[in-house]
Every structure is written in C-alpha cells, then in structure tokens.
Image 1 (cartoon, rainbow, N blue to C red):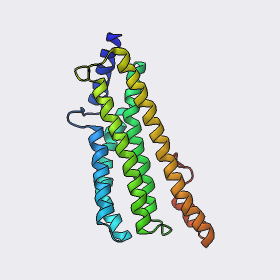
Image 2: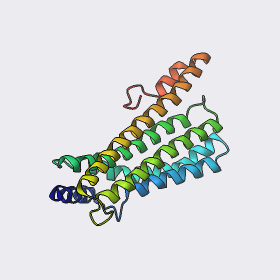
Image 3: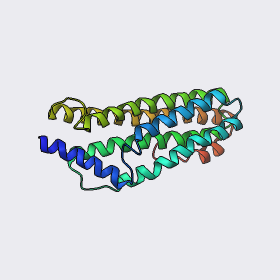
Image 4: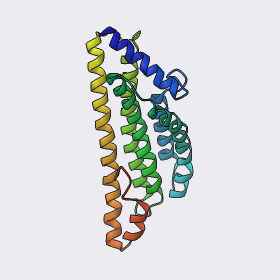
Length: 208
C-alpha cells in the first residue's frame, strides 16, 4: 500500500512536470482563487454592461494562462488508478473555470440580463469555484506524503472523496449555467427574440 501511495505522489509530480509546471511554480488552486478574486473585483467596480465586459478581460486572461496548463495535463496517460483520479480532480477544476468563463462571456453579450443580474450570476460562479479551489488544496495536502499525518488508506479515501466532491461541483456549475441561460430563453420567447439567443448559446456546447 505504501508503494501505491508513493506511486500516486510520483505520478502527480510527473503530471505537473508534463504540463511544464509544478505545484510550487504553478498551483491550480491559486489560479482558481485568482479568478475568484478578479471576478469579485469585476462585480464591485462595474456599473454598466460595457464596463463589466472590459473589467472581465483580466479574468479571461488568467483563465487563458491556466488553459495551457490544463491542456498539457490532459495529455498525460498510463497513470495508475488513484493517480488518474488525482489528475482528473485537477482537470475538473479547470473544467469548472472553462464552463464559467465561456458561459459568462456569452451572458455579458446578452441583453436579457441586467448589470445587477450579471453581478449576481458572477458571484455565484465565484463561490462555486472558490469551494472547488479549497478542495484542490486539500487534495494537494493529501497527496503530499511529507504533509498530513495519515495512513495509506486514509489518503486513498481522501482522494476518492475529493474526486467525488469535485465531480459534484462540476455538475453543479453546469446546472447553474443551464438554469441562468434558461432565464434568457424564457425572456426571449416572450419578446420574440429566440433566434438571437439560440445563436448566442450554442446548444451543442458540452455544458448545455
């Protein structure tokens, strides 16, 4: 069992190296928290829709910096089962960011939402991403064999719990996006503007 735990730690290190970064130099949890922080600033400083769009560009910039990391991590194959769960857990935080950024960018172009509503929606995304980031910190501490004093079984169980929790958050963010977009569909149906909204929110997207 100890050998298995060691392999997970080693494979996680390989995952990070393969994406040309390490937790110490590129921490996905820090990236997620940075996106959260910039989102909160956008909410606090935006008084108009155009103002919010301009302010949101910094959030998008952070996301694009992390996307290269996540794309590289996806290419790592042939991992042992538990190391695979660690990898997939990290990637789910990236997917949560992806759903948020891409959905919200479209909502910013949607006249069916007021500035106040957009701020509330962004706040909801920020809370979900922040909670996901916290789980990633726990995962990092769990995998770090020099960190928390835990038995091998406890570490394995913690990896499973974190993986399942992040999966729930990923699904919740997808659901949250769909519900908000559904509001726009309902409003556009009442105003006869369905074609524009349907074109804006491509129903072939994975989160719809």
